[in-house]
Length: 217
Image (cartoon, rainbow, N blue to C red):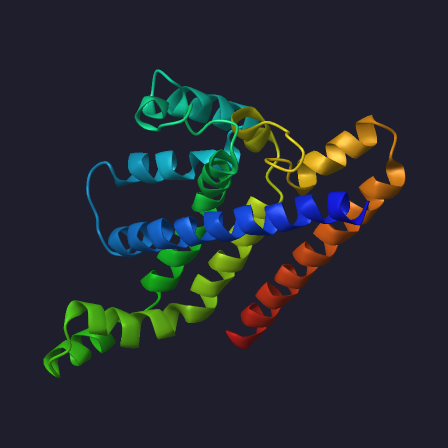
């Protein structure tokens, strides 16, 4: 019983952790690149990047199903492809969490004074050193809020994960999927226990985000 309870918890943390790592890397690069650039199709590009936030999870899941299937990228993966594995759950979590990280990173980098970066350059710092020692520390509270929000979003992902990873106990069954199964099978006590886990994780992350927001005022 204890093992069946903890498996979705550990799997959810693993999936959310890897999804957050991917989201942070891609979202930070995209946010930094877009923060101060103006071009004709910028609004269209940003609208596309933010789509996973407003599209139904099943639509996102269907798109990933087509993309990762045997007629798409799945043909390049050995052993039957990536669908219905925890890797697919990581990809689903990354996609739905990306807009949160991107928007936070872009907002954080936009408020950094360009003159401070220019001063660092005059002292011989290269672009990486300027980013690491000037830009990121100044954007840190907003950027970190994006990291935490991305983790919570990936942790709670349901619809897209169900479509591309399935609901396989011990392999792809994350906490949201486990709660769904428990309710469907009448195991309300188990469902409540998993709900409590998600609540505590989410509350803790939101508390940290609020604390970071208070420090920036």
